[in-house]
Structures are given as structure tokens and as C-alpha cells.
Length: 355
Ligand SMILES: [Zn+2]
Ligand SMILES: [Zn+2]
Image (cartoon, rainbow, N blue to C red):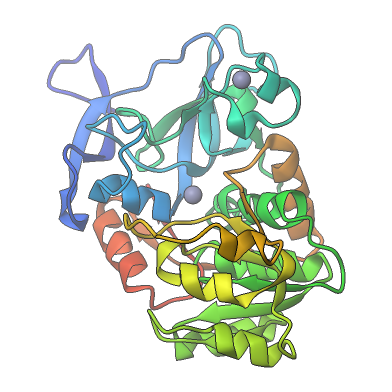
């Protein structure tokens, strides 16, 4: 916290997007120090993951729920420095991780049945105004914080909710992947995919990992996947058919969306489950519903992570069954550089920013 020109106003440094654009849209602003409402904790950001969601927000590809000017970033590891009067379960000094939300209602049918990712009153962290992880401090209601285990460093831990948690949601809970099944993971070298590969392996599946990058093949093979290498836009269904004796895959975890839609469709086995998790472009896709139901293929989707899934994700990490893969870290002021790297997609895993 620094003094502004007006000594009564305490300010913090943040990287703000005032209107959508390229990575250069980020501007360093001094914004008012966050003041906690009743159930808020003020969290000092120790590290924040750089997610494709942030890229879509910054570029204007994602518009729903976005209120600009905005501070992006929902993958925060940090330390509680102040709590609202109604906070019961967190104290100043606690090391914490955020779920992807700033708040949820805690009372609706979705919240009461362990499906709080579907809460209609939930507010995604880093989508609304000047409160997000690309800053020195962030406000998060206590229900959306979980303890950061001592064994984990913030740079690694911050990405677990959004990457391992979301893929656990997609693979285990929505996709109901069982031991012995064959699972296709698209965008396998990316921040979501490289963790999806590990989660699917932890579920006992055989994993076919799709990547466009020759440089990522070795890492994916080391994790235990069989690699489907295809250039961007190239149809990989025939490779998948060859690798599965013509059968196709029992489940597909699609972290890419429109660009691989037809390839994934043609890769599905009879009765397969196709779980949509990511969408990297703003493009729409045409398809004929009969192409799915005549093969008994089910299209499903998963979004973000519940608290219960985050605890399970942390257990997978602490047992060594899943390793959070962080490619590199940037100073907060260099977040535009981190976004350029995400766009280049040259490295495996996630980037993080450190205030
Ligand atoms: Zn994320
Ligand atoms: Zn709710």
C-alpha cells in the first residue's frame, strides 16, 4: 500500500484493462486500496496465474459478465491481510488460494447441492471492475478461499484451482472417466490440457494427448500420454482412429473448442462422452445433431471448480499424482509479456505473475 497525492487515500498498484485490445491494453494504474465488505477478506497477492480466460477478457472475445475498466486474474495464491466484520473462518496471516469466484450466494439450489459453479449470483473474480489478481491486493469472500498448504509455493499453488480443479470437474465428475477407458485431451500442452492429461491418467485412463507443437511431445510422453501431433487446423481424427483400432475414444476433454470441433467429433467412439471445457476463439461451429445421436455420443460441459473439487485437486498434488506445471513467472508490470507468451503457446503449462 502506498500513499497517493491525497494522504487520506491509500492506493495499490494494479494492471488495468480500460478497453479491450491486444496485450498493450494493460495500463499500470494506482487504484484505491480495497475495502472489505462484511464477508470479504483482503488478500495480498503472492502469485496469480495467467489464464486463457484473462486473454479472452482482455481482447474482448469474452463479453458476458465483463465490467471495464477491469483488473483481470482469478488464480490467486496469497495471504489474508484484513477481514470484514462477518468473516468467521479466515484470519489475518492465513495463506490462502482463491476459487475462480469473488463471491457466491451460498443459499441457492446450486450452492446447497455442491454445484456452486452454477450459482446465478456468483461473481467471477477478475471480470468485474477494479478487483482481480493482477494487483497487489484482491477482495474475495471467505467462502471462496481455501487454505494454501505449507508444502506448496504460491507460484505453483495459484494455478491448481483453475487447471487441476476444472479438469477434475470435467474428467472425473462430468465425464465420469473410468479406469481402462481411452480419453482424448485437446490442447494438451496448454495450461488446462497438461493438467487434464495428468488427471485423466490419475483416473486410470489411457490418454491420447493432442498438441500442435513438436516441442511439447516429449513432456507429454514423460507424463505418460500417447501423443497425437497435428498442426493447427489439421484433422487428427484419422490418427486417433489408427491408435484405437478404429474404435475412437470413450471420452474427449476439449480444452480448445471450435478449431478442433470436427476432429473431436470424428474421434468419438460409439456412446462416447464429449466434455467441452475451453473455447479459444470467438468463432461459431455448424454441426448436424444426427452426427452425434446416431452414434450415441453425448455432449457435456464443465465450468470451473467447486470447493470440494479444489480440496480433491490439492490432495492429488500433495500425493504427487498431479504436478502443477508452471512455465515461468513475470513481474506484475510485465503482464502484457505474459499474455504474448500465452498467445505464442510455445511453452508447456501456465505462466504466473508475481506482484
Ligand atoms: Zn483460470
Ligand atoms: Zn448460489
